[in-house]
Image (cartoon, rainbow, N blue to C red; front, side):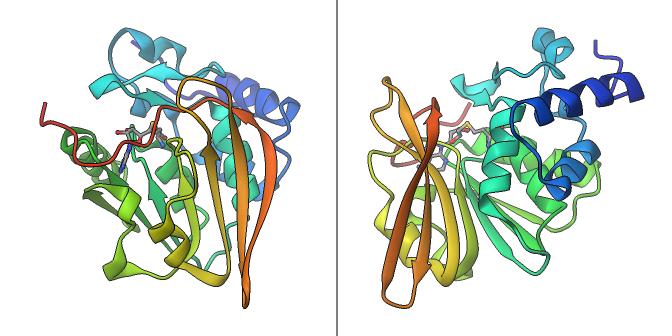
Length: 216
Ligand code: SAH
């Protein structure tokens, strides 16, 4: 059992984030508010405050905290933004975004992960997150466009529907590349006339898979 996000653990956690390049105070402030221990169950929960990815249900992973911080920082979320996250997983990244954005829509292809994250958001009082069980590679056309889109599973290329649902002036951050080789984190900006692509750093994510996951 974890002893929770006490002051000592929190200080160490924030120190590690800073030392790995998470410098944005708004992002650090949001991560300070979210106890990662709530998003991990079973034997791995005692490692919740270490900077490593950990297994969650349905064969998926909760991302490494410094990667969550760097992706959130690259997204440059503004207080009035409506953000789409593809790949809810444990819900941790969505919880961090919820402290920075007006509204967060998060979607996972595994109904169980979406269901458990939704319950957790309710338990910890994060009322500006809406959770969907769906194939997020199609985005959420009913709620588009989005000022920001974050994808936390790797596709070979940025999915067309997500590019289409990004508002002009908007930013999308996502890992791209083959699933079992090194992928690149990229940032896409939408302008009046097209898209700009920028490569940020190598990363390793589970693959973005089309269709729904089987119920478990
Ligand atoms: N952001 C998560 C980590 C995500 S792991 C966290 O903070 O814990 C990647 C997640 O993407 C997995 O839960 C996986 O089920 C989901 N995923 C993969 N392909 C998807 C798709 N097409 N649509 C929605 N979710 C998808």
